[in-house]
Image 1 (cartoon, rainbow, N blue to C red):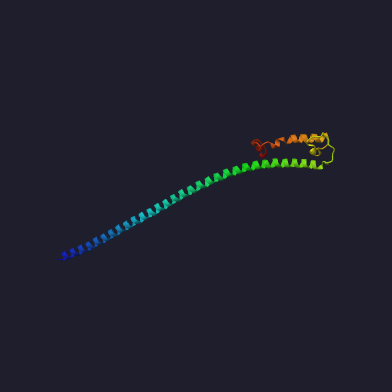
Image 2 (image 1 turned 45 degrees about the vertical axis):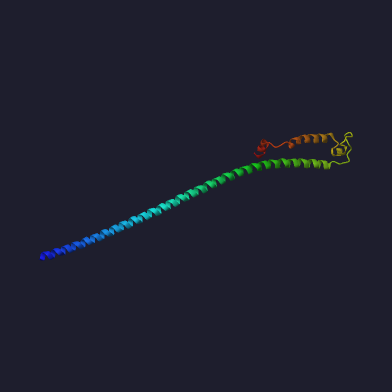
Length: 166
């Protein structure tokens, strides 16, 4: 009998060990399942973060493209304005020279006395003859300088502008 009671103690302790093993297996399974879920959530967060970063890269690429397009447009406008400024500077220079020449002519006219004797024969322009100086040298001066101004009424060419700019 002693052996049967010892056998039952062995069986009960074996059943407790089995129970402990089953509980430990169950905990391992729960922990493994929990770890799998945690890893899955981590992968999802990582994927969402990567998706957000890729979206940001696309957005920044579009912004960069728009900025570069704006820079190109602004550069073209700048070059156009710079060209127009060069033309205006050339025209300003020409007009300044014209004004200086006309002021010189007006000064000569104003310093010539109006009561000088006429040196031309009576013509229809007699009323303006007092504007011409009586000396042949002065007549040569005006005729030479008037010929010098013939180019002023001609249009400005690109070659003329290029010459003044450089």
